[in-house]
Amino acid sequence: MRPVVRTLVRMSDTGLRERKKRRMYQEVSDLAIALFLEKGFEKVSVAEVAAVAEISKPTLFRYFPAKEDLVLHRFADHEDEAARVVDERAEGQSPLEALRVHFLGGLERCDPVTGLNDAEPVLAFHRLLYGTPSLVARLSGFLERSEEALARALGGDLEARLAAGQIVAVRRILAMENVRRMAAGECAEEVRADAVAAAELAFRQLTAGLKRFA
Image (cartoon, rainbow, N blue to C red; front, side, top):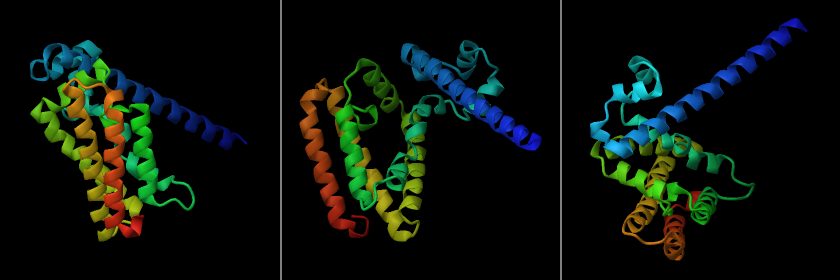
């Protein structure tokens, strides 16, 4: 029994360390974003973020290799979201149908990832993100990794990779249209019907062209 107990303890310690690490990531990212929103991304140094977070600059870079990652950490949980939706879909449900239902659910919840959210903190974050060229450039890496994860979930072959590229692009375009309208001052509730119609149109087009995944 003793070896089993030691194994359980090690697993428990590992889980605790992982939770603490995730919490640290979130706290430092939130502090950095608050500074960037207050002063501007370019006007805040990594050293200033480290000082406010009460960690050393080398420690900060160990967790966030680039300054931009302090902002893009908010996307971390969504990087393989499309792949998870495909992997966890209901029996008999096609990948495209699962993704369609998931995106429509996000619109219903006003999930910020769909762009359909007019809360001021979300609008401020989007102004920071899309108004900073280095952040927009760094965001392309997130999209590439999301595409790669989805391609693996769809089968990993060339056809799957082509489909993943189209699906990720469609989701991005739908979200950016909503972001644009929110930034222009429109209300999420006023835009919702159009956003749903756009999503339905987009997924109909995907379904027509990607028969294998429909």
